[in-house]
Amino acid sequence: MGIEPKVVTESEPISEVTKVTTITNPVGQKNVAGTQVNPATEDTLASVKTAVEIIDNFISSTRGLVTEDSGVAIKTAVEAVHTALQSAGITQVQLDAIKTATEATNTALQTAGITQVQLAAIKTAVELIDNFISGSRGLVTEDNSGSILAQLNITLSALRDALRGTGTKDFTTLETDIESILARLDVALSTRATETTLAKLMPTTVIKYAVAMTSADTQYSQALTDVKKFRIHTRDFTEFRLAFVTGKVATPTDPYETVPAGSEKYEDNLNIANLTLYFASGVAGKTAEIEVWS
Image (tube, rainbow, N blue to C red; front, side, top):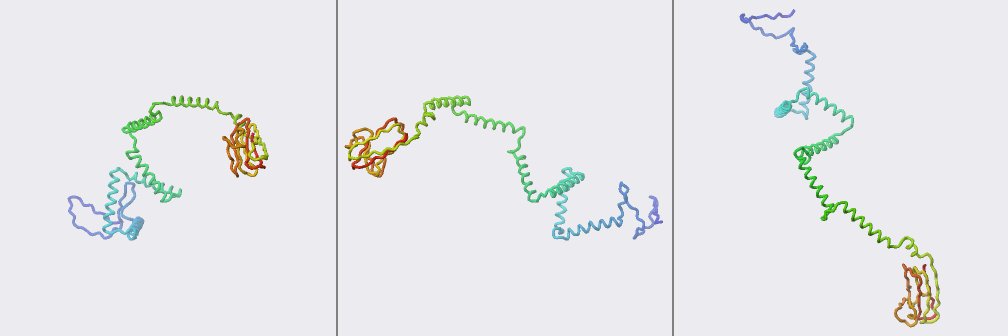
């Protein structure tokens, strides 16, 4: 058996204090669940040793070097975080839940292959949205919704006035004006040539004439019918005189025209039922070549 503890009553004085150097049969302290927590066992000492080694490794590394000065700063920072959590009413249960959610989020991001760069971009986008929502220009409340609506009404009114113009016209007036324009166009177009009429103006047949001008300064002529276009020149492109009325080219008398050497007389876009050309050359033995399209 072990050492029996001596019970001393309140009236009995302590006669002797003995220094205890070794406890051979310690009595462990138990928690509410009945589990012994004190004194330390070999197992719990091993756990404490492991924890101390982790702390020592952190402190002795370059990134975790804790000095007397930095230790104070770390302590202050930890206390500030603790105070903030207490002020916000964050309990240990909530902290555990946040930790679990954070770990789950981190696992999901890693599984999805989300990189740090992508996370930074997401963070920036979320901050922009948050700034808009919390900003005065993006926050629509019951108080400022009336003002915003009033501004929209002003904008719509200005648009309406711009559409109506100075004459305060509406879409009914616009429709009436358009119908009036269309009616005038119908009348105007009805007086224009039809496709059938235009087709008649297109030349489909060509006739060639060769008229000998045997004598000099003598009038020669050629009658043409259904003329759409024509051309006339001397065979060797020498100079000659041309008129559309008789008696003007043998002895040059206006109205006539001189067609220079190397040139010809050409007219198109005509619609003449009957046309006679009168021509003469100052040199005998020339030939007038004529083409007429009908």
